[in-house]
Image (cartoon, rainbow, N blue to C red; front, side):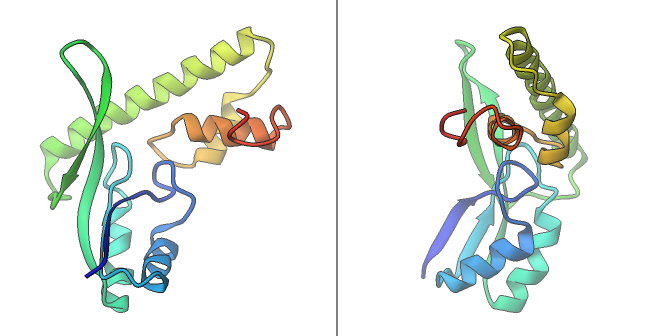
Length: 152
């Protein structure tokens, strides 16, 4: 059995939608996958049907943002989550807001440094509730401030 238990979609910082990701997993011979978008399980509801159609075992997951006692940010992978759990959804909503606030702060710092990137460009490019650094990097490339996400 071949599995990938750490995958992202456009619902966080991935480039594929759930259906495209399921097809790619099938094309690569995976028998099981877990969708672990950053601080959201929104994509999981869109992933079950394509996986079932392709004969792939699907595991609902999430990459949770957390902090150590020293205040360092870490990510924790969680699996077999209940997408109807209100306490989980409330916590994820909190961290989605934290991610959005961080994007605002990063774009403001870029503006202060003389890079006139509009946060609206980042929001449009991200198109999700869990934006992050990769979306800012893609926006910097799209707007011509950098030649590649790695440069950004």
